[in-house]
Length: 191
Image 1 (cartoon, rainbow, N blue to C red):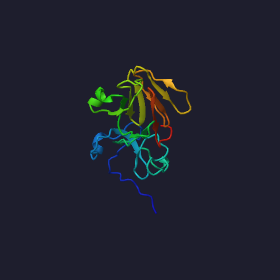
Image 2: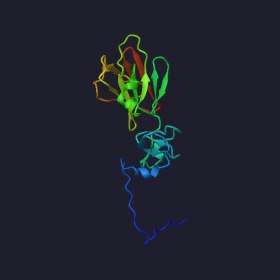
Image 3: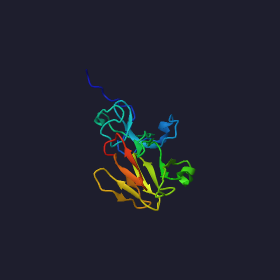
Image 4: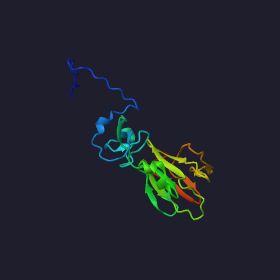
């Protein structure tokens, strides 16, 4: 087999492969759902993944198989919230937690879902905290709750969240609101 020579009459087109410079949104016009568009990479089988992932979240193949050229695409669910009563909530959108989260402006505007937790002892605020998806990360933000939001990262002691300051969650993180708790679980390693 002989090497193919480039066509000297063809115009030269340079391509810069730099993370953080995904193709424009027009390249993903076939997306017909409300999921946020995020920058990601495809595995060898073209499954859309977090650029920092070592393995594909669908097929498990090593991400070293691809060129890791980023593109915009719909963000897949980033895991789930497991509630102390056994209920689970898929993390494909933001949530406002509390005993009456429906009245929060984010819920009213449709940018977050309400996650109502029963609170027999009255230690939880009406709108206690927000779980938000930012790119490929999951954050918790205390919404100036009366009794605070306590976060326990895996392998760490619980600490009180500063109101309004986001905390990046890792799989296994426990969030305590009043006497109730939810835990962030994900198949994603360390993200």
